[in-house]
Length: 286
Length: 286
Image (cartoon, rainbow over all chains, first blue to last red; front, side, top):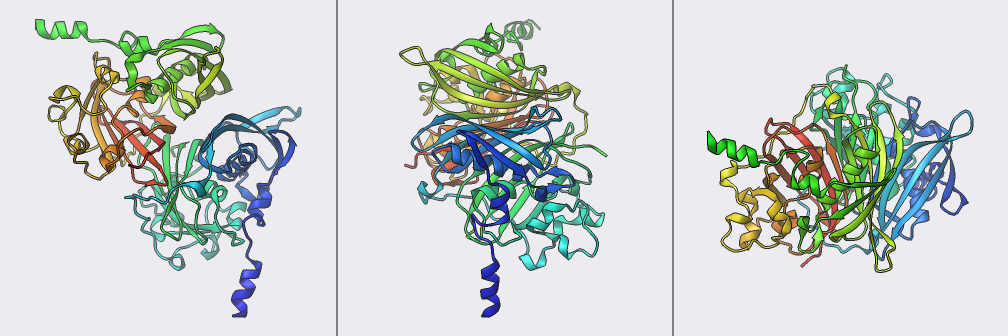
């Protein structure tokens, strides 16, 4: 099958993809890392919060004795822009099975002073050391086969909110959560999609940090438009994902007082719940 | 009504209750606070994680220009014991509507050196300034009336796991999530209860931080016993609670690899979803 062989040859791998290059950090001194935030992961002009979390996650994986983020909590302070940034890490505690660290991402103002963009606290471990027990009652999301879902490339006109990041993602939305794009939001705070990286790189714990914040806001299906900036986002990585596309399901149950929560679940091709996340975001009521 | 008047006279109020006294901090120097952790909030010999979060929450409320925790993320490092502790806070960013801070709770080892117990990141605001919009699809938990629920005092024998904290709480568990106490766990990762403070003090944002971590572990109803230590706990306070008892519903959907999540919702008497939380905890499989 020459065609399949050719596709396999051009498929990016973990460690050698656009996502890996754009989240790679340069060690400046122990615990301090430089990075040039890529314009490729922007929505309109803002750098995607999941991409930024992956950058911080990789810095902590280097700084801590454990490599896998088990739980990472990020508070978003100011909006990041493409360009130079520095990540400063701090080891809070190292243990046998879990280590905890802190990291902050800074950019520079006109005077060259550091401005903090995001601060995170995270506990890391070794996903491969976990026992195989599973007593999960959660069910994978009901989402049609990938071929029956739709992405920006399937649209005759640009989808509202299309941005540089859409070129880097394989994002196919469940038609039942796509009403907003057709001017007919369902009113339900739900968003579901097949998710992958456009260059075919398989998922790993760091791309899971991107996956939970890469779908259109659930607020769109509730009938709101405009920016939904994240205040806080916590991700639990529960299992190393199997190769192949992921299913991401996001739910909002409580929109009140100008804030909403987004609860995300990420499922892999082996029907394992590989990540759970919750974020608190602001909404602009229109 | 002399009886009612007498009950009202002995009922504790916000600011003047055992919970307030046991979470009160003494300012040592700007941003640094001393406290003697009370033995009254222990489960077996460990200090309850929700009580500790309330202590840290009050320290940040003093240190930051905003008084109400909107989202607070705690990573639990080492087990706390009753006795002296110090809370060190750091202002991360102050804004018009939200301020972000960090706080750590330390105790002392035999040599008098500080050992970090918990580190938190939190964003604070003013709950009273939020607009009244509510577009919530979440429903209050199905829980029987308070008179049909059961607490430790209703048991002829001590309930497994009874501890000092049970004397300070008004905790009445939904009989359908009490199977574990009778040796017949349901197998569902659910725990529901009416919650209040035993001295009648009404709820406020700080007691909500306690409420989300005060029920027996959902793991008991899944058929596990033993300690379920919290690794990370994030709470979103969404609304100032109305007076009267709260309903707390906790759900676990994914027990895998020796970890589980506990998702809590707290509802007030006005049927408002006043807090949401998620924690990642370790389980000992037995």
